[in-house]
Every structure is written in C-alpha cells, then in structure tokens.
Amino acid sequence: MPRRDGVPELRLSYRLPFATGNLLAFLGRRAISGVELVTGGVYARSIRLPGHGPIVIGLAPDPVEPFVALRVTGLGGDATWLASVVRAARRLFDLDADPSSVDSVIAGDPVMRHHVRATPGMRVPGAVDGFEIAVRAIVGQQVSVAGARTTLGRIAERFGDALATPTGSIVRLFPTAERLADAPRDGLGMPGKRADALRAVARAVASGELDLSGTAEVEPTVETLRAIQGVGEWTAAYVAMRALGHPDAFPASDLGVRRAFAMLGLPDDLGSIHRYAERWRPWRAYAVMHLWGLEADRGA
Image (cartoon, rainbow, N blue to C red; front, side):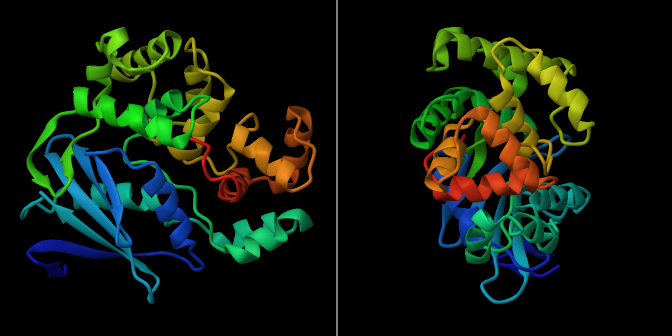
C-alpha cells in the first residue's frame, strides 16, 4: 500500500466516464462544517468505525488516470478495518456504477441527450452513514442547500463527538442516532414537526427497527421509513437514492426537479413528472442528478 507523509493511500478504480467536477461540487455545497470539507479537488470527512474508533478519509480523483486516491488517517497499522473503509468510500463516490449503461438510457430521451453528453458519467453521491443522510433529508425539507447546511452544522457542533486528534478543519463526528434520539426538541434549530420526525427516525435507527446501512432490502426499508410520522415521499426517496443506493429512486415532488422540468419546457405538475420519468427507468436517480445540475440550489 503506497504511503504519503506516513498516511496510507490506495487507488480505487472505476469505469469511465466520471463526472468528477459535478460530484465534488454537489458534496462541497452540502459539506457540514467541522465534519467534512471539499477543497483543492479533495473530499475529506470524519468517519466512525464501530469497534475501532474515528478516522478521517480523503478522496481525491486523479486528473488523468481513472482512479480515486483514498487516504486514511487514524487506522495506524491496523489494516483489519481497511476493507470496510474502502466499501464506504466506493459507496460515497458511487464508484461501482456502470456509466455507459446509465448514460445510454437517459440520453435516449432527446430532451436530456445534450445534458448527458455535456456531463457524461454522472454519479449519485452515496453515504458513509445512512442515518446522516436521513437527517440531511429531514433538515432539508423545503429549505435551500445553504439553509440546510447551516442547521446541520449547528446540530453537528452541539451533538457530535469531538475528534481527539483533529485533521485540519475536520474536528468532529456527525452525531449518532442514539444521541439525536434523546436530543431536546428545541435544541435542533428547526420547526417542531421536523424535529419530532428527526428524533423519531433516530429512535428507529437506534433501536434497530430501521436499517439505513444500505445492506437491507430497499422496499421494506423505505416502507418502514415512510411509516414514521413526518417522513414523506420526498424524504424517503432522497434516503433511497443516497443511503440505500437505489438507482431508480425518484423524488418527483422535489422543487429542484420541478424547476428543471420547467427549464426544459416540460410539464411540471406531479403527475406529468412521474409519467415523463418512466423513460429513464431503471436509472431515474441519475436523471435527478442531471436535473439538480440544472437547478443547483435545491436538495438536501
């Protein structure tokens, strides 16, 4: 394993093409202060490894060769956990995607063809922590990316554990489900109903009733999530996209999706959006990333 400045580095391969800039821009706009950072073409963040403790990873797409450099701080000489770190990194950057298959389907729609050709190899950013994605989705309901980012930063600062050894501006972990399950309603900095939904999801995850690790079956997991009061179709679809890795998840009611439909000259009522999107199956989540690229300040 190559090492740079004493930090282990691996090369994670993927299939071309890869819309690196769009992926980093998406993650950068949503980076939670103190937990993650995008700078100089590198995405870095803290991760909690059960049974090991916190680590910090850095992911840097190579500008020439088809690989992403993964750097890990905090594993020391213990390689036992390296496989799980690699899996998390690959999920986060969607490195196992088949971009040719995805692009051929979406570009088969004449309305989308230009956008796919302009940005081939779009990825759906995944998750290192499915619960974190659920929190992002609940916080991001009906607010801008900037507004959600501010609230998430405050939640992380108040309820996230500090790193014993900070790495630059990465100084803490995102809060656990157990911690947010017991968070005071008025301490989350959001409307009461949304705070209640967040705490209910946290309790479901903490109890094991809801598995957002990405290893459980998608449909039963989504149904369990939807059954929680305050969790609607948009939230469930967003979690399915990013936490569960469902390539056909489609948040049709998303304001950014509706605005993109209008920009493309398509009917933007909910029924028409659902019907039109059928042509993008089974890759509707990737089509959403293209739509959000047209309307960048929406989503969670």
